[in-house]
Length: 161
Image 1 (cartoon, rainbow, N blue to C red):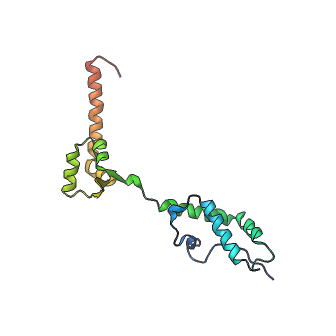
Image 2: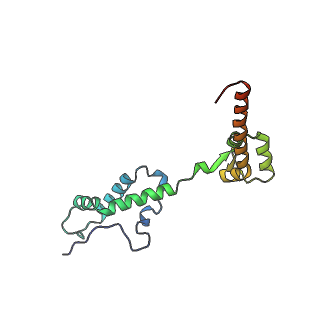
Image 3: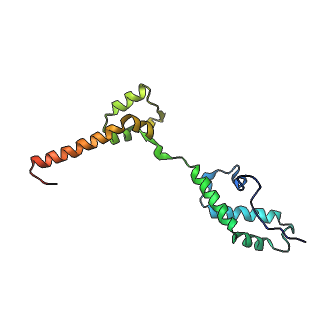
């Protein structure tokens, strides 16, 4: 009898995609642990002599030492982190006020006049890219004014920086 080699690949353009179908990626803490558990379950449920005289443990050990193991772990890691939200892409109105040196009413008025934003509880959320487009130059000019004020103060007090 000709023994097959165990593999998780299918013939599609994304050979491991089926591994993550229906899986909540946020519950995967460790890609290696997830794959080890997953593959052991597959082997234990499917090794009916198709792989020669190898036991389930031997078959798993052989696969675990193959290049495919690292490929699958990397696939799971990439998909897990690609699916995570970019929390830095959103700013609160308070963060905008601090970053750009604005009055809180300025930000609220901009929102009421159509600045794209949404409310979460009592907090206004604005995309960082929207805030940057609206007030980005202001942050640079505020920083420049702050540096100038420090130099002027130092000059008045006869200090050198």
